[in-house]
Length: 405
Image 1 (cartoon, rainbow, N blue to C red):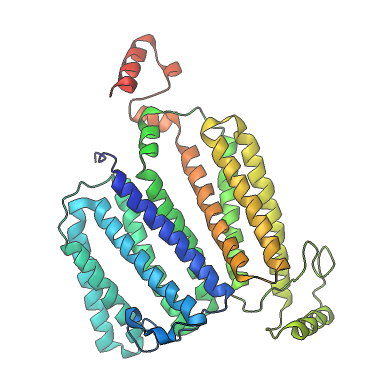
Image 2: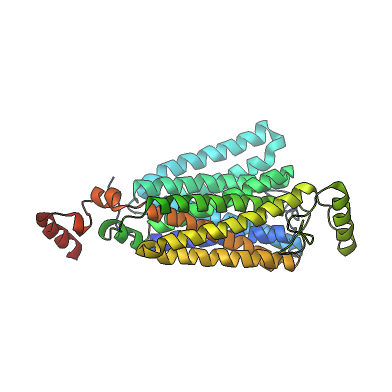
């Protein structure tokens, strides 16, 4: 399948979707930091009203943060539907019509046969209507590459699953669902970032005209390892945020005055007594203390790993600045983590900590993708290889291709 020409407006829209997703992650972090997760007790309605028609008299306190998060999530879902329609061109109309109709019918079927799951029925009917309308819209546009179309559909299904998980977190009141919801949000942000990268003019020019020098295999391995480690660290952070016990350790860089705090029953009783005297919060457990200590140790390991990647990439022009920026993000993330503890989990700092974590993961993912683009794979596949690897006859052809307007 021949790729379409670069479309700057498609790239701008993909970038807008990625930025809106980052904003959604920030709002989610703010909801957990403000302990506002269950401020709106029903879903997909809000206090019995249609979500988009909630009276302003309810918009105060935790409801403001939780309801804003819901509306922003709906906006991101709409952006993704438009994006998959744009990426797929005319060929996307029929699948969207079929999926939309199927979701509407499934929602109606749930209403009729499973009245106990009417919240899910409401959700499917609503999202199905939006998808069906997107399929009805006739816009003459050329389809993007097959890879981009697949990525668009992956984002389409993932954003719907995310919306369902967010609703089930409210209906079923399960913290485990909240942790999964937070983890998938990070994956979804990376996915939208990849779509923005692949639709960019920079990526297309790099693919066709600017083969990069061979990137050491060891550097690629370290990039993959470090990015995976950051994702695990974000999972640990999500688990900590959904414990509803505040900070398990309130001092830094020590922990209860020690390098590794005691977690025996007597020590826990002392910690919890001091916490209750300061503020009325849920008691902590040994697991929560150990989890936070592992989170701190992982942060040090990530800092060292990213620093090592930056040092390895110092002679690789295509990665040097990106890895230095990555290192800057991690240094900022460590500082924000320390500030979150020292300010007793101030909401603005805790939210910034979540946002920088998402950016750190996305940067690592982009570095992994860029480092995988090797001249021996991509450039030869397009008939373009570094001039040093061409014979004298082919060099003339190479120069003609790269200098052509």
